[in-house]
Structures are given as C-alpha cells and as structure tokens.
Image 1 (tube, rainbow, N blue to C red):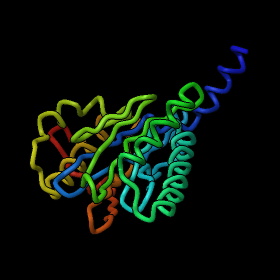
Image 2: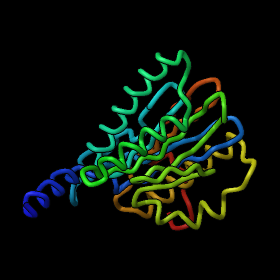
Image 3: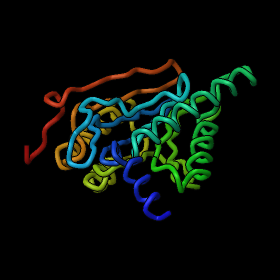
Length: 218
C-alpha cells in the first residue's frame, strides 16, 4: 500500500549520507577520491567520522552518498563480484567493469534503493578513471562531485580544474573542495578522507577538521 511504501522510504533514509560531499578527480597515472565523514538522521548527526570511501578492489574505490545502508550494501556486493571475477580471469578487474556493476545494480533496484556512487581507480588498460553512476547512467568524467555539499562548490571546481594536473595538484583540489563544502553545508562535516590510487597501489589519508585549509569567511 501507499502507506507501507512511505514507511519503507522513511525507514530506508533514516541514516542518510546523501547529506554529504564526495569528489573524485583523475590525473595522468591515477586518481584521487575523497569525502567528508558526517552521517545524518533527520536533524541529528549519528556518525561524525564515517569513512565513505569504500574499496571495491585493490586499486578501485567508490565514494558513497544516499542512504548509508543502501550505498554500503551496493559496495559490498560489487566488492564480492569483482573478487570472483578477478579469480576467474586471473587478473585485476577494469575500473569500467566495477562502474558497470554499480550501474547495473542501481538501475535494477532504482525503485528500492537510494544511493549514488562515484567509482574511481586505476587499471592497466586505461590508467586513472572516474565514473559517475546514477540509475541507468554510466559516464566517464575527468572529475565528479556529489552529495548535498557539491551544490556549494560547482563554481570552485569549474574554475580550478584544468587539464594536465599533477598528483599533488589533484590532492590539493580534493582537500580544498571538501573544506569549502564542509564549511558551507551544514549536512557535511567531520574529517576529510581521501585516497590516492595509482599503479603502485593506494595511499589513504585523513585530515582532521581543524587541520583543513581555511578560506576568506573563516
């Protein structure tokens, strides 16, 4: 019934990380993917330090937004499927394969799930890649942002992004974008997590809220 469906939607969105900021950017030879750490339920913050960057394979990560439960479940399913796939083919999976699995699940269960994942990673065929997945959409982009905090930083990322950025440039780009979004968006906050992925592996970092860069109005 309509009443039961409303109850289900209210329950599934009770712990929501759609009120979040996620970002990923590709550079020559790898990617940087980042997020804030605040998880909200209504007006309450239920987790201040959730890591929304979930590994899908050794050199492929996703950034989670939407219902925290739905997004985490999707990531775990894709992680399992990629493990089986890599054993079958005897080599690491492609980033596009991971993004396609995410896209297929989000499309198949678009009426039941509330989750948006950005997939980023490195593979031997195409190097560093960033994909956005939403319902049936699958698009490769040089960078991507998502979550409620993203609406505050579209102008910043459009102005700051340029082709040929180095690994260090991309790390600064991600940290600055997260800092600006976390300052403006009341639903984003906590600490900033970011992961750098290249052919040599992954490098995970966490920057505490009081160590983030500050800007004019701060």
